[in-house]
Image 1 (cartoon, rainbow, N blue to C red):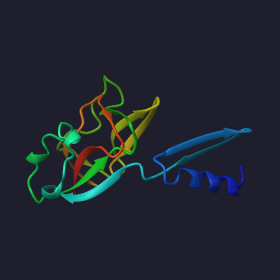
Image 2 (cartoon, rainbow, N blue to C red):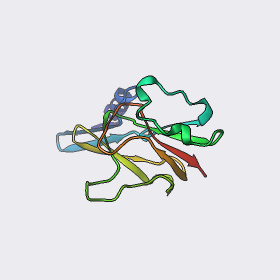
Image 3 (cartoon, rainbow, N blue to C red):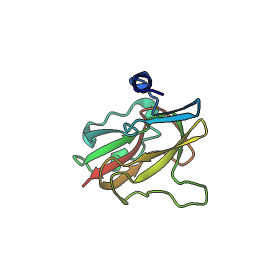
Image 4 (cartoon, helix red, strand yellow):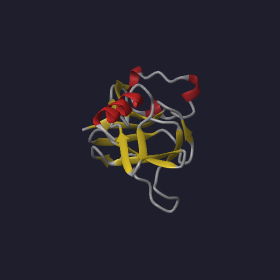
Length: 148
């Protein structure tokens, strides 16, 4: 695979919600993975608007102190949310845990692929908004993290 073909593949996935692409051809294997895996928004909780369909998912957001700055980690893909790597394993993070940038927060399974969702900042997990094993949609809030 030459450089032009690689650039064409990268251009192909830009502007889509595809985060990872793997192609094998004539003994060559290429894997392209976007680092935009976790969408984050910095907001003040007093300004958060919850869509009617999201009310059940984000219940408890009102318990967060007003004017506390948080990062909302949202789902980069449609899939199933898992808090641990297996049913017997303990969750990657709990509410109140400190996290480091790059630390795995959860897994989202999409089409039998396990996608690790990582923290984009150092901070503390303020709220986990999704229950284990529940389906998630693209852009759906998963965690609230108070940055350090």
